[in-house]
Image (cartoon, rainbow, N blue to C red):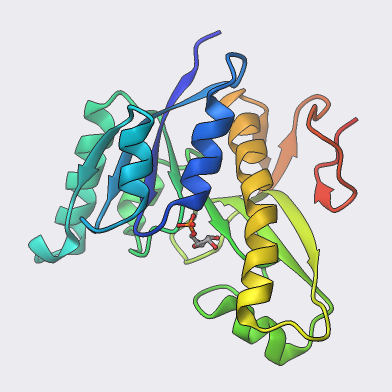
Length: 218
Ligand code: GRF
């Protein structure tokens, strides 16, 4: 089985990157993390990648006058590394529509809410302010609008009465770390189809069961 080379784009600590690296250590996982790109030289995730022997590239957005030039530099690094999939994992730059469209259905994003609720920043603060009882995490195919695109997988996470932002962020993050490897695995295995703007998954989902994660394993 050919493992699809995947680039992970980060800006920070890289805990989702770590979850993807761990998943890709399994010989039967259909993706290989072949490159980590950060727009910040001080991103903690770079050290995680280096420790795992994964190539890294720092491309500082401040060195580019135009978004498109930055996007092209990121894309060139990804193509040079032979990657055909991209995972956004806490990457705090908005990719331009041209790049997103060139890589249509080949860019994944993870967001710490049950989209389409609470796109954008300050997700947990807004979830708490809205008083939702259940929040969660979403992995979706990227589209030009921020946190928009066909949903591959979601995990539901309860909001507890005494939760502050940090409590909720921690609980959701634990779900993210299970969800992202599931979604990338499905995409890399060629099992994600998009029809009428919605994702259909081919075949049964073989993953440790959780009633709070969908697609549910069979
Ligand atoms: C995660 O909560 C992710 O959903 C959001 O940014 C955070 C990144 O965390 N897009 P990490 O760098 O993966 O630890």
